[in-house]
Image (cartoon, rainbow, N blue to C red; front, side, top):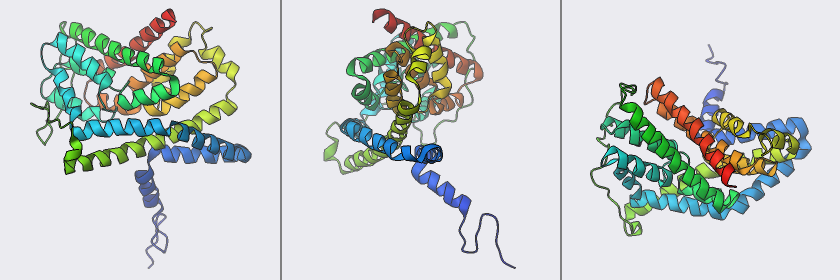
Amino acid sequence: MSNISPTNTPEGFNLFGAAKSFKQTFGTPVILSIAVVLGLAFYDISAVPGRLIFTGTSLLEILPFILLSVGVAAYLKASGADQLVARAFEGNPVRAIAVASIFGALSPFCSCGVIPLVAGLLAAGVPLAPVLAFCIASPIMDPEMFILTAASLGLDFAMIKTAAAIGMGLMAGYSTLLISKTGLLANGLKEIATPSCGSGIPTEANVQWSMWKDADRKSQFWSEARRSSWFLGRWLAFAFLLEGLMIAYVPAENVAELLGNDNAFALPLAALIGIPAYMNGYAAIPLVRGLMDLGMGAPTALTFMLAGSVTCIPAAIGIWSLVKPKVFALYLGYAIAGSLIAGLIFQTVT
C-alpha cells in the first residue's frame, strides 16, 4: 500500500513543511510583501513594475543610514555597552525612574529584545515603577530608530520623538510609583521563572569599548550586523512597498480630511488607529512619511508613532506575558495618554 497523504506527494514533498521552512527562513515581512505584490498583480498587473522600482529606489536612498544604524547597534552589542542599561534600575525609585526612562529611550534594545531583560529585572525584585518606565520608553526609540527617523522625517522630528519617549517613560514610572503606594497594583505580576542561566541584573557591566581587539567580540559584531541588516532590510522593503501603494491609491484629500491639522479629532484618531494598526517601528517610518506627504500633520504623525510603538505586537505580547490584566491595562493607558499629551504639546508649540 502506498504511503501518500495530502501533505506528502509520491516524491516525498511536504507542502506544509516547505511553507513552514520558507516562513522560518524569510520571515513575516517577506511573506507579506509577496502577498501584496500578488494582490496588486491581480488588481492591476501593469502597476507592479512601478511599485517595485519605487521600493528599490527608496531602499537605495536610505541605504547609507541603514548601514550606519546597523553599525551602531552591532557595536553597542559587541562592546557590551548594552549591559549598562541595568544600571538604570539601581538606587532609590525616584532616581531609578528618571534614569530608566533615559536609558530606555537611548538603549539599543528592540521591542522583542527588551522582554528577557524585563523578565529578569522583575524576577530579581526590581520595583514595577522603573521597569514600566523602561518598558514604555524603550520601544519608542533606540539608536537605529533615531538615525532612520532623522533620515526619513528629519532631525527635528527624531529629537522630538526621543524627548517624547523620555517624557512618556517618566509619566509612566512616577504614576505607577504613586499608584503602587495605594496597594492597587499588589500581586500585579504573573509568575515569572528566574532565568536558568542565572542572569538578571548584572552586578558589573563587562564593557570593552575597543571590542575589535577581541576575536569573539568582533565575531559578535559581524553576527549582530548581519542579523540587524536582514531584519531592517525585510521590514523596510515591505514598508516602502506599502508607501508606494498609498501614494498611488490613497486619495490625499481623504487623509488630509481625517488626520490633517484641520480635524479637531485628528490626534485622538491617530492614537486609537496607531494601537491596532502598527506593525513595526522601523516599518512605520516610511509609512508615516507617506501619510505626511498625503496631508497628515506632524503632531498627528508623532501621536500615531508613539501610541503604536508602545503597543506594537511584540512589545504588547511580551508585557502581557509578564503582568496581570490590571497592570497591562495601565500600560495601554500610558500609551494612549502619553501619545496624546505629546501630540498636543507638539501641536501647541508649532
